[in-house]
Amino acid sequence: MDITRVHPDDASAAAEFTRITTEAAAYDNPYPTSYSLEEQREELRNRDPENTVEGYLGTAGGVAVAAGSLEMPVHDNTEKAWLGVSVAPKDRRRGYGSEMASFLEVQAQRRGRTTLTTAVGYPTDADESHPDRRFATKHGYSFSQVDVHRVLDLPADQALLQRLREDAEPHHRDYTFRDSVGLPAEEILEDYCVLLNAILVDAPSGEIDYEEGSTTPKSLAERVESLRIQGRTLYTDIAFDAAEIPVAHSQLVVPAHDLLKIYQWDTIVHRDHRGHRLGLATKVRNLAIVQALHPERTSLHTWNAESNHHMVAVNDAMGFRPVRYFGEYYRKV
Ligand SMILES: CC(C)(COP(=O)(O)OP(=O)(O)OC[C@H]1O[C@@H](n2cnc3c(N)ncnc32)[C@H](O)[C@@H]1OP(=O)(O)O)[C@@H](O)C(=O)NCCC(=O)NCCS
Image (cartoon, rainbow, N blue to C red; front, side, top):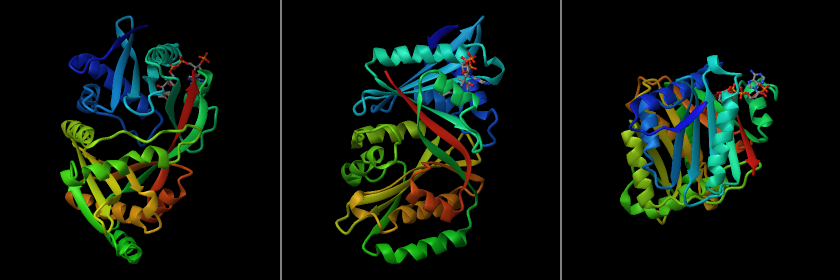
């Protein structure tokens, strides 16, 4: 198999890369989520200065058979690399996945990365014998933790959202809320980045330790601009304390290339402000706004560590149901 880097301007290589990742993600999975071609090409342009993404295509006999991704944080967690390998179902069990995995590992180590991470999707009733889990363990990866992919059918029950919001209100009377589309207001970005950077440390991460993120107002602006070019609209609800400092937020992303889905991204409450139901409040407020703006959307997707009991309780209250597991795996080299 020949392996070459995928450049975003090479439309046919990017299309083959996207075909393989899409077919691999959809196999045996009733709720596949993967990048469209235009989203993928923008990702490979690396406009987010905090994260480098490289795509590789494996071809055999002139036919594209494997896709590989390598993601590396630039300013924090610089010993880590995230690896993704996809082989279209018809091309499996020929060693292509293994070849791509070994290639990515060499690339990662050349860049000084010593903790390699990956994720494997499987049905909620699958055990360690699932093919993709066997692939990970065969390559020396250990299980770190499981994330649960949950889906909420849309439109969510507005009366339920309203009741959840009203029940939570007495717990945060000293806080105010503001919504934004795209980049939040410039004057709050410095403090807002402190909140964003805590998620790597504060969210459960299984057997792997993360250090805080390095997002700055400038890099956040570049990331949000890249999202816009991808056709993904970011909606954020932010809670402020009495000193007008952002202390909690929840993000939703509405993709233009998939007309039915909405993605739930981060929800985080600053450590000093927990216990005021701000996670639930920002999440519910944001959803009420976004589903009113996008009534055509039929499903909301979220991923949380199974051990994240507070967030899972909020999701349960909102009516999300588990549809699939994502096993996080790692290997130290
Ligand atoms: C996992 C994946 C990349 C494997 O691709 P592949 O080209 O079929 O992999 P290989 O042929 O190199 O198989 C390597 C090993 O994986 C395991 N494996 C893969 N498919 C298997 C299956 N259907 N049953 C049992 N074991 C399997 C075996 O240990 C196999 O070694 P063996 O053939 O010597 O028994 C592919 O199934 C895929 O794209 N899955 C979806 C994405 C994913 O989960 N990627 C892995 C994490 S990034």
